[in-house]
Image (tube, rainbow, N blue to C red):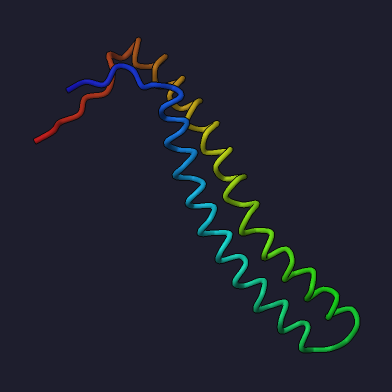
Length: 101
């Protein structure tokens, strides 16, 4: 089986979704560490560290929403470019051989 062309929009949507899922995972991890670290700074109780702790916790919560969107957009654009360049290269090289059972 030889792949000679990839749907540009198809790969863009696929990679956009995959990267959005990766962004959600990273966002959750970032939020976890930011909330724990921010809580520790709030527990210290002094003015500057308490303010910094609250800001850190807020950024952690925002990361849960921002990172999946950001990663999804970059994955979509990356998928578009990958499929476009693959299609151009496949014209000159004959495509990609895939062996299936």
